[in-house]
Image (tube, rainbow, N blue to C red; front, top):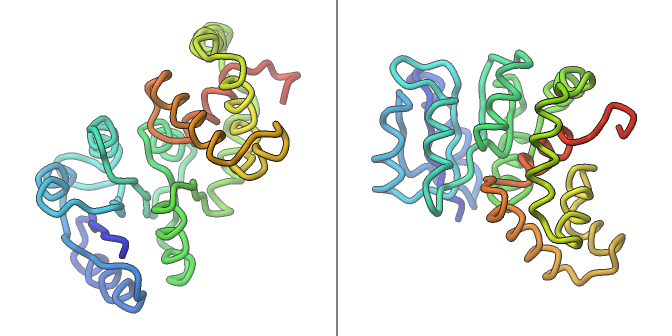
Length: 219
């Protein structure tokens, strides 16, 4: 059972999400919050596997709440579900540690699928968000940011770096295992070590770091 915390300032939206998720046999809504400030206490009390997070809320917004939550040991995954899909919101959410970003016009079936995917450890982006993200990062970072990203990647061992670069290309663990001739558990171990060594939250942040480190001609 995937335990979900709903975070949205609109009570009607929360009620609709609860009703929708109630039809999924493997998903359980364990609590609701109307503000990001409520998230830490609810996470501690209910131990959700995933937080379905809105961005714009009174008090503490969803991006700030996500960043604070993902800094905690054993934090649940965060899937952002919002009407706000500007480039800056997408990038900030992913860099804050969100493992997925969906728009509220996503179909109920796809939202449930995304919850299962993110809870299983894989990132999710809606097609519209993916297109905007690709457009946003095409120009790449400045030289200073690129140098900083490369310095962080230099902390990795040779095999860890190879795995990180493969994650940056969007490969799954199974695809990385085949390409690098490694056992699947070994790939998972390398990914975990990369996250720990670089103080990252998930493979989306690995991919963003690899992108930041690459020169325009490398993409």
